[in-house]
Image 1: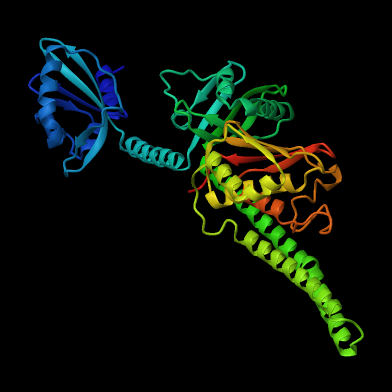
Image 2 (image 1 turned 180 degrees about the horizontal axis):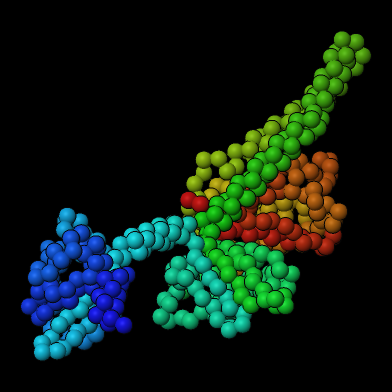
Length: 492
């Protein structure tokens, strides 16, 4: 066997380029692959300085590295992480990976094994670009990914998930149980049940839950996941995403509030239509009928003038009732239009209302007590009308031969104020619960107790405009307590 021939053939056919030089950086040998890589003819590289294969931008560094290596020739393997470049004869540059070794005989020889990794680097650059684009897309969409390993009991969070939860990955280690503890307390059970159900029935996991950041910010997060099972159908892991949908949820809430307002407007229109068809028609019909009777009496001259006066008095009374109805209708329609919200001292407001109602209070010997009334955010005119209507009704619907006693109070319920107006009057039957706050729905005839049936409808609209609710509790014959709430977060 000709070992010299075998060595030479192996040297030339080696898939990577091989260049051997001395400590003066002079090339002594180069195989065919090295000559092909750098674009040189057979034997053309011999006696050339190794720097002929190195781009100008690398030469200054290379000289230092070469000198240091010659002093300490330790074997170094190939690496694609250094982004080294080679220089072809035609001036083109390409990415290379280089392994260095040495042989010592009578002198030291350095061996460089060179591989063209341009395709690998180009692909890596493209992958990095795609990764950067994907990361940017995830950031823009407030999206992160996670993996829950059910066998190993570990939970992986991507960098984006930590950002969404506003948590430092150095200070918090993800686990399924620690994640559950992050979820809003009111949403934990629903989330656990949803995830457990997805594992049990092999269905996608999809839920929105609330989360309060360390800084106190409320977020809405959508969790989506898909489960993976082994050959026996046992779940082994879940992979999924978490997305910050706070903006979407807030818009959804605003949309619901807008729809609710539209529904209330439609309800008002229906009530106004009912009023136009019924309540306003009654006094109009009365006026028309009384005028016809008066005309008939005058034409036939079969009665005294006192009869005509009596009929005209009835016409006047119907006209006055019609005026009150129309005035109340217009006043209700104007509520919530063009009025800004400010700080309103409700204690001062009630005091002013009592001054306005002084004659009614005095004539009925009413006893009114109020305390603990706060400063709230609201519309001063509307809140004044609210208290005026409730206090007036409490006096109006008093029991005969009983001193009206009215107590006004307020409690702080956290996100809202809870007001109460309590009286010892006639009380309200339970059957009127659904109609009491509707326009012109009076519980007593006008001959029994004077009124238009507008006051409580106005109260309901005012409270609704302040993002609150109004209701009552009553024992018929024993008095009534009206409750209403005012949201602390009002629009300015």
